[in-house]
Length: 248
Image 1 (cartoon, one colour):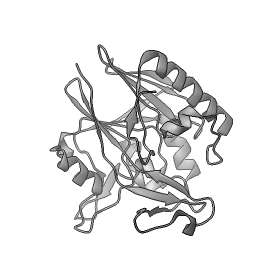
Image 2: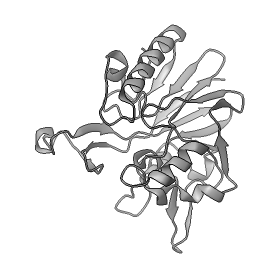
Image 3: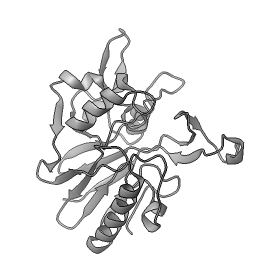
Image 4: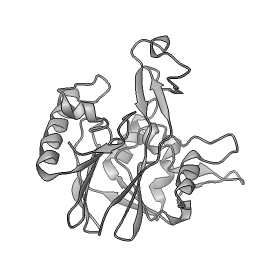
């Protein structure tokens, strides 16, 4: 079966040392007016449709629109997908810009998962580390609901989901970051979360100060880029402001 890729852009932001995401519009703003060291990033979950499944890779910031609707709900409905239609939510890690849309508080003031019919796939070690580490990188109230939820499938260090998605803890960006490779007959789609967040980072020896282990992350990017080029992977770029997905 084919793999359909739909980027769900939440916009472009700058993020500084305070870990706060501030909207950025290049028609209105100047990057040099933001605090020194600010990074310019896209926030972009992905809807993947294959094998009869609607799969969400990471969940964005969890922001709401002026009408009170979750932005990720609005983005999905734009593509004729109801939140109840999401079958799988797959999480690379639980930093707040990737995990903000895991749950929300409903009109009765009760916290509930945003995708009521989905199975959530998340690394057990990443969850435990995130709960322990907390602020500012992790907002535990975004994901603590997963702890006792029957909708969660805890991922080990490596393995396979439903036979067509392989995964492995690769670390680097954070100690228990996980990357994923989807396979169909003739297609390979790779989601490397924040280990492979932008095309330009795969093309250079880029070492980021914000990574838990910058050198390992750089080495992972180089290895993924080489293997992806050999095997004709499509890379999904969560933080690329210009290129949502591409082959090498």
